[in-house]
Length: 343
Length: 291
Image (tube, rainbow over all chains, first blue to last red):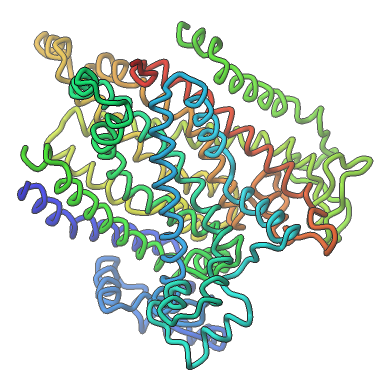
């Protein structure tokens, strides 16, 4: 087991270097005139000769390996360039917007996992019967339904028609409270901060704004968890120890709860990393629809304005996040499953 | 042939086949269903004026006109062609690419395998939409650029599936036998390994035809897809972004701007997913389970 973990840890820098090379290669598609945007705020005020001088100064015409090393050096020092769209350094923008996105993703994670597992078990235990077919139909239709259309439709219904759940993150009055001196921003997540500050009204307002984005973000991902849980559960229910449990006279409920479900959960854990990847794609669309000021909305706006530092900065950030998340998932997996631990 | 028979027998996949067949008919008959104006690129949606405000379905514009007065019906009909184009070209390319890479890596094993799989890891470190978005924003607008971006970051799944299949196949006796009688690596791979390992790829590919269109329309929705006015379902929905909320008292005023193109995307993706799902069950009977 130790060998496995050491190997994974040793591979981490290799993959991270690869990720940086890939990002850097994409950057090379962009003309130096555009790349200079990454370094200089208020570029409009600079003349053409000034630009050439800047390109020389920042060495954007140097040989690629030299440029790459210089770029990595900058990145390691936390300098990802200037985000035109946010009008601040990319790193600052990521730090500012990450809590909002994390909050949204965490709230979406709960229904994704619990609903996915619950429906997966139901489908497996009713295999071949109507409930199984029903969950399958829901899963396939959910999968096939574009999340951006879903988002627009729920917004039409629950905001336009019913006015229950507005877009954005907070109402104006709550926004004022949150930005006032009496309200301390501990985490940057509205719900958590409201809870710590003991402000129930803000908490409720933040939750009310989260409902639609969370549903939109969650509904794409749960179908995958459900399908994996179903097949894993079917596999487990065929094992000898389940037959043994049955022949001991245990109730079906106990067999599922105590024997089958726990073992069937293992493949679902490996999906943890993939779910995070899916959620990161999802926030781009969800935040754009609901005007939710997180990383996704920022990067979507940046991509439209050809704001390369913003887009590549976010790509690098999500790349690192996913590599680390996958590592954690792999290691957790080893610790949880004694079969892997002991082999 | 047997597989096809089973697909027709299963009600879900039969529905899928029918949906895809009808959409294919729409794509083929596009010039009849929505005749383009003489001498004009048929993929550019005609406009009925320049007003920003969408106008509801009416005589001559069966599904209404969206922001900029682009005809929604025309966009959907010709958009079917774009959808098939994107789905088939992207999926075909990533499947071929992934199968080649996965087979070679797995067949030779050792350092080759290790290197290739680490490259796969690197490409998989990016969320698909984010990666495709990054590349499209750099390459510029246009359906061909979108396809290129989807291909660049879409092949890894196939390499992985193929790799694990080949790992089991290459241990089989008949491979050893071929090697013993002196058959070359290339011939073994093409004649013996590939045909015996390729089936799971078909399942993934069938579903991907739908998913790739979904991703392409997501990019168009974000404003990074086809050029403005190009017949593309995602773009039609992107036009509706400013019209999600109707006027007070009439919240669903602009429903047609999102419902028609949304339904088109949904049907296309659903059709392929239904076929793919049944396909998987046929190839892997264990999934049907019994107890």
